[in-house]
Image (cartoon, rainbow, N blue to C red; front, side, top):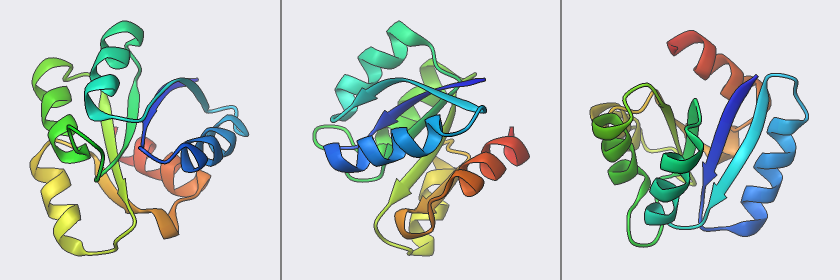
Length: 120
């Protein structure tokens, strides 16, 4: 079972994503953060295998978070998510060491599962 941290400033979205992931035998959400710096603290304490982070967050956005994780926790995979479907975010996410950028409108258990398994 993959240990996941969710980082998104929208509490309702975090609850939805937690519910989605924990409806599967593949994922277990071990922590949540509403800010980038909070996510770093949680990641350091909980050592998840996967971080799913919103591209826009207060104080440290998802791209900066992905860069920090790549530099300090290279074994942790990162998926960046966002409300926009712009291909620029996909390129930027990959440049910062994320596995992928997934638009929130297309986010499903299957897309997370496929992204994590295929690129792992």
